[in-house]
Amino acid sequence: MKEKLLPGDLTFAGPYPRLSRRLRLGIVGGGRISVTQSAAARLSNYWEVTAGALSSDPAKAKAKGAQWYLPEDRCYTSFEEMAKAEASREDGVDAVMITTPNHLHYEAAKAFLEQGIDVLCDKPLTNELDEAIDLIHLAKETGLVFGVSFVNTSFPMVRQAKAMIARGDIGNINQIHVEFMQDWMMNESINEAEHVKWRLDPKKSGSTSCTGDIGTHAQNLATFVTGLPMTDILAQMHVCGAPKALEDTVMMMTKYNHSIPGTLMATRLASGNRGGLRLRVYGDEGGIEWDMEFPEQLKFSVHGEADRVLTRGQGGELFPSVERTTRLARGFTEGVIEAWANLYTEFALAVAARRDGIEAPSDWLLFPLVEAGAAGVKFSDATVESHTKGGSWVSCKLNL
Image 1: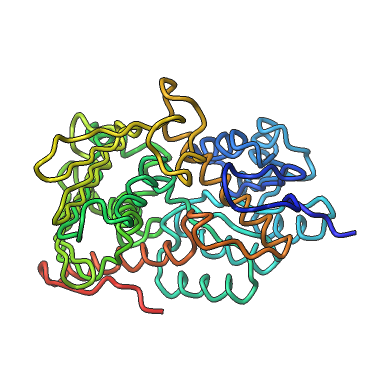
Image 2: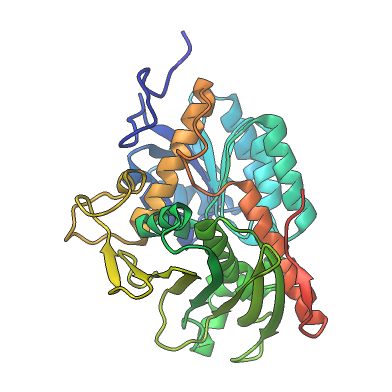
């Protein structure tokens, strides 16, 4: 009898369902972000980490695997080896998370898709647009689940903002502003750290650094919350700190649906900003504002009325579809690790639905798919094109 993961009485309403077992997750890339993501996967209670390609150096791969409590025979030294070996095992991984430097994303994702294994890939999806489009086609051909880790769309109050805007709470959108301000590159010595050097190396990071790394988060957040594609940009890229091969700051004017104006800024040299991802959406009846440094709050204004601040937490004013992404009652704080857990929860349910042959409603699971990753790559390419042309308007819309 074929294994069933989801309950037979699944209704797609209320809290997310329990699976018949935890899913098996593999890891490709043993850097800092893999530690964060695996912790979140475990927090979701839908995953257990069972295999990994954590280093190309055999000794390091085994040592890191031991730290993760992985069996020695499931500590691999390449993603190609891991994909083939795990696909041949009866207890092989159900999915893999890819957290390598950017230039390895395409080949790693392709290797696992070709072996029939679902993928969650870090962003930017790839360094080249044709590779991103190839991954879209491969995911469609195989029918596998392919998610991209734009984690900021998984905060409950971001989901609340999206639902309120879709309901028309601020009227017709007339402008969109988003920024991602960080300060971790203020100290020039950080540029020599191992986890930073590759981000400034065009051979590994591609044609952008700040834009592809955090600017794409801003682009994705704005399009996710508003439901509008970003279609045109006018961009300038800057090196504001110590000399670098790639930019540390980007500023741009934006358009959505070719007419709705906005702005986007991203930098790593904004002193006093730790995780300054901020979104402001204004309409002809009101506005909504969200700040990742205060992620549990959502400012909502209706013109002519007192401003309101909505707060995350069960028992509040949240949509039912949003409340199921909250994990604690009001008064107990939640942050980015819980947002990561929400992403891994929805990814797990998508994998389970595919394996069970269930077609879920389009509004049940909202984690970013491979198309969102490709849109981010197109956005980065357009930023470079606009900057190279002296700050001209160029299209950033992904046409498939």
